[in-house]
Image (tube, rainbow, N blue to C red; front, top):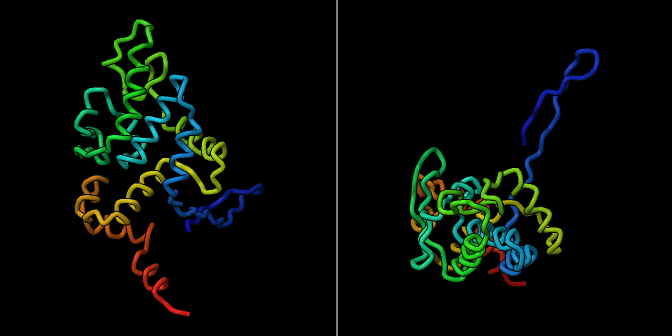
Length: 211
């Protein structure tokens, strides 16, 4: 919980509380419904599906996804090169074939858009005119799609990253691999991160009780 000081009429101030709501992890069904809410016919819908695939299936930060260029992703081998990671660190991560198929549909739609734009030189997740997609657009988009999909949880970009991390942990993926995928500089950071979103030891202990 964070505290801020708020100025009031007359020059007086008082402390006000600013509450940070916890991240909510989506189920696989909710994530699929979120993607389906984008639609799969319009170029914008295909682009937004590709965006969600990168956030949810590769665990990218929204800034990393929006900074990708076509040259940074190899859909045949399932490789994504993040050249503009947090604090300037670059990394190479993997992405599954089903997510690659979603992104490939957007890549093909980009090729068909003829507006005199050299599509190789603009961001992968661009507008139909070849412009950059802003993080503020994504912040508005995801909650709107969540409502359309009937998801009661808070839906936002970092929550999709958390969802991927929770799924990898449940699948038994080594914590060192999860750490590298997320772009953490320390496995300790990843361990704290995972325990925050999915406290497995606590859950297993409670589920193991008899009644």
